[in-house]
Structures are given as structure tokens and as C-alpha cells.
Image (cartoon, rainbow, N blue to C red):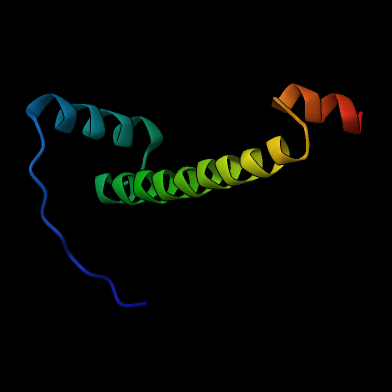
Length: 73
């Protein structure tokens, strides 16, 4: 796998938090940032899917996730 480098500017407090969390998790700071980006894009896809399915569900007469849950339970 080809790895690329990017540079970012972050506030001192955010840098401190990243470094502390990486130390707590016993992982490299870079690995923590990569993991956070992967999770961000994963959650973005999940939320988009939820929105898309929500629109479909409303067209089917469901007003909320609770309605769907009640229907399949």
C-alpha cells in the first residue's frame, strides 16, 4: 500500500488531546489520526444511508425509526 503524507494546522489544545489519547491507547499519533479519519468517513456513510432509508421509509408510511422497529418486532 502506498502511503502519502499531508500536513495540517491544528490548535495547540487539539494537538495535546490527540497526543494524550494516542498515549492512552498506546498507539502512534499518526495511527490515531488515520483511525479517526476512517471512523469519520464511515459514520458519514452510515448517516447518509440512514437519511436515504429514512426518506424511503417515510414514503412507505413510517414516520420514525421507532415505527420501523415496532413493525419488524
